[in-house]
Length: 104
Image 1 (cartoon, rainbow, N blue to C red):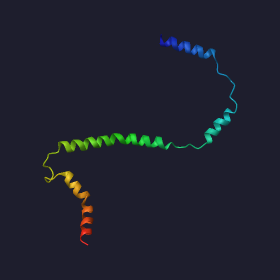
Image 2: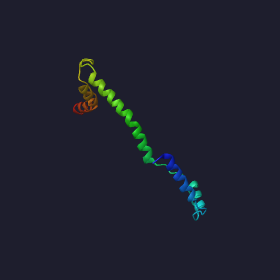
Image 3: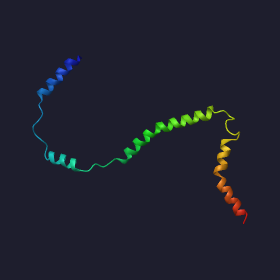
Image 4: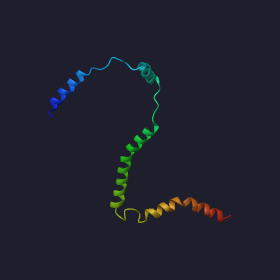
């Protein structure tokens, strides 16, 4: 169907059926009550929007760090294993406490 013909038919149908002048009961009171009611923020929607916006930068950082660790030369550090250094750092406090307990 031609777009101009469809437009003409829709305009003719709208002119043949004019809107009613009758207003529903207490319509203005319902509208005024809705306007004066305070808006309640939807916290779930705010959190969801913030988390979705944060997802893209997190993925970009993850990809950047993954590429860095994949393409980094093996001997770029002091020759030691990063996982071993991390484990020693994390468990350093536990090891100090255990040696302090045994020395008593």
